[in-house]
Length: 324
Image (cartoon, rainbow, N blue to C red; front, side, top):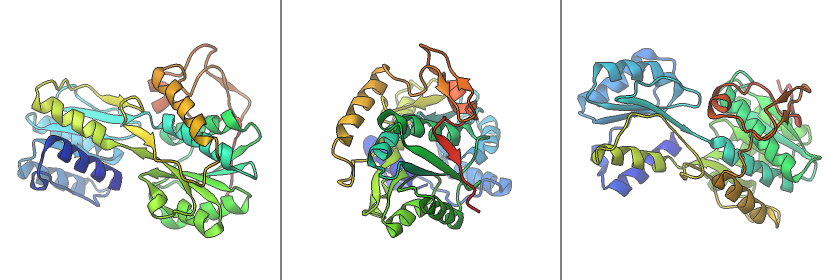
């Protein structure tokens, strides 16, 4: 929510919208259909021309309202969502795995124990989370072949207590760097409390845990919101779904902390250039999973559809821990 809010503020500043032109509906439960519809209806009643809904759980209701109100533009953000109508309803997301790969380089260079923890909201049934773990693990391996990634799954996007327990379990298992795909700062706080290091997600978490955070994997939602609203203003909107990455500045790493190893910045710069240029796609070639099977083909890279919806395997240097 915070990252999307920063994106909306950036868009408003770029385009010249005043704050009273923006209607915000927060704390709307994904599982409460009545509340979702009420929030959408309130935006319609307040004469909003564009309505962004920022979670997977709002997808079906957004589709329904887009059909009901064809003169209003609707856009829904979710990791592996599939609904859109090519007219006044699209979906938007991005190649966050690119930045997770970069953060893996940071972690792989920093670890002293060669054990790196990862708190994941969901398991292998969720390609967004699993693909993020794998991209991170590939990044770790690119600079440290001895390091292993241990994953603790909470089965919840928002579970501060469980995220803390999972983090503590990873640290107890010898992990001295933690990464995360969950929505609170619990892993960062656990790292700072235990004198270890961490990599944040969604927004710059060094503000909460300056003694632990090496860098953060972040969304620059302003890049999309600005282009989307601009396309409506200048009549170039085409109804297409959006899937951007580092090239579009939709995803990035925050500035590296002084806690990072000396050559980290050079390694990150080189990898970033290779990704943006298309020389490297993260999921390139034949990839070995932790069950011994292989995915991909020599000289090829996994396509967007596979990355967003069909990664249900862990890379060979990844293992799960039972933290409960």
